[in-house]
Image (tube, rainbow over the protein chains, first blue to last red):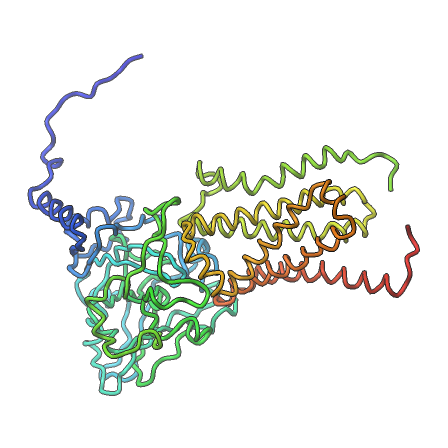
Length: 326
Length: 209
């Protein structure tokens, strides 16, 4: 048998870890040992983009200090993020959307912003893409069903859009409406929900810097099954609060009647903040299964209050009984 | 019935191997990634798969008597015990997946779940009710229990109803009854057939031996 020894050589300059990265890694390790969460470091971006992305689909974002990850949080593999989707407009099984959402046409696309605003407008998707600088926000995503992911989203704070349309004093809530076109969305034939899918936030929640208007993930434009071309991401709430494939944003005075709240009000509250102490009627919310890296033979992990964003968002709910206002 | 003897041993062996198919598929998918693997959430996949197959084998078990009566193939009866035991086998795997992979032996959480959540309560009840049926499935037990054996094994009707409720309530919050609806229809059909059959026997006395 012939054994080849690789030729000895000096490392290429590109293979040497830059000092700044190296010191950052040391900080991460030290912080992890001390159980402290650090903002996502710049070098994480390298792992949250893909080489396979077609050039025309690239959507880079600047790393954001709002990507606060814990020591055990790492980006869920792209394959899982894009093949395990709850998007009922494209079927009830989580394996459906990746196949059936191919029929979704994301161009041309407009988003109508209306209601209690001084400057109502219809935005073209290309306008929205240029409205503010793109940021990469690596957020935990906790589904109400008891599983979670870590997703490197690309987008900007919802507040960027809100300030441009100038809500008036009556704007207490914001409603997000998903596309409702049965020609493109085969799942609309089922009567599981009252279509269109409507989600909503209180105006202060919508204005919170963490609330993201997202156009991409993993450094590329959103795959259709993840809510292309534009979706909400509200990381401290259960995943269903983050409306996908949005065509309309309405500023309203009264609390919107949201799709899941209407279907099963005792199970899905308007707020639906991630809360390990408030069980879903049919399962506990105390723990969650992290998709991807946790693997098969691993105990579920503890779910964190506000999905780990309590420091940033708990103030929004000061004085509210979170066990009653679910 | 035809005069030719039915090759029951060969049929039993074939059914046995076929019934192991779902388990083989899970094992192969989990270890080699065959059949598309177990997906992004393997525990959920295994839980659902074993649950579904429990229900399928329960339905087949319940279908044996009507099928035998409608076709006159009395040898079908000789498959019933094995298929019933496969229902128990997949039910046991389903329960094991829950208390091991899902709950990780957290006894306090499991008890809380069973007490607090009707969907888990009935699922657990269905499993527990299958245990005496499996234990009394041996020839010796059939002989020992005599007439009481038949009475005891009517518990399978309760098991089927509890299993349907378990699945139904699981889907309730998501308003998705498409699949469970079919299973419910099959179970209602199979139990309904028995009711009608009983009623008929009462009206017209037996003519056949």
